[in-house]
Length: 369
Image (cartoon, rainbow, N blue to C red; front, top):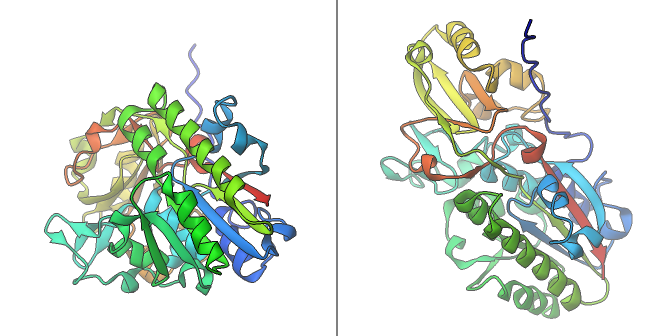
């Protein structure tokens, strides 16, 4: 007799414990945090470096490739749900969960259409006039403190940058190796807090996957970058390194069948955290149909279940709640779920967004120079 497969255990956000939302409040206001020790919080100057897609498990599996990172103090922490860049970067910046800051995922309904939060676009084009960034993201960026931003110059004027980083001074770099020089110059000019961001590892993982040599080489570059920063920072400066999510190889896209779609009026989210929006009065039928069709591949949960279980934080505003679908397909198998409205998703090899440990656990590492 073959026993039925047991549903794996999710790794939901640990908002009251080791979570990335504790970083900025500790660095700005000295708020006690499970991830930032007192000597780092009390440093004269602080640099926060976010390496997009630097998952804890992926780093631990490659010990010889990141010796500088692995020699730093600290440990793992959870990111947010969904484990996607827009929601997670905003939570790092604001120190609150997605249910409170409002960037509830990668794609969500806003201003009468499903909006891509990173690009602030809909199928109809730019959505900034219809949905100003401040109308969606309502928490003070970077803890309300004075920070200088070092990031790719192509993001300088984006609506998402405005939403999650506010009006802090932006210093765009042309080449990733310039991050070190930009950060040091700002500190020499008297700045006390610098936020730096690099997304190369995320791009490589999406395009080539994690089993490729490309990912290993890019991880090595990230380690080099951290090493050069440690060499360059003046005495008394704290360096904190973290990430917005991990990533897994999950190229296959699952087509959601007609037995489920008969109850669906629209889709949002992303492949590994796909929201299904029910037709009028059909939420219960949709949950039952989705469970029957996809519980072997995903945690199938209603919106109310996820809110009650605290996946989006202790506070979920009415505005954030209204951006969620009725039923979520949160993949635990190495797959994504389709949405005809999401362009080019089928081309990716690496993915994130779900609540597997590989996607949810990220490093929070620190050193005092």
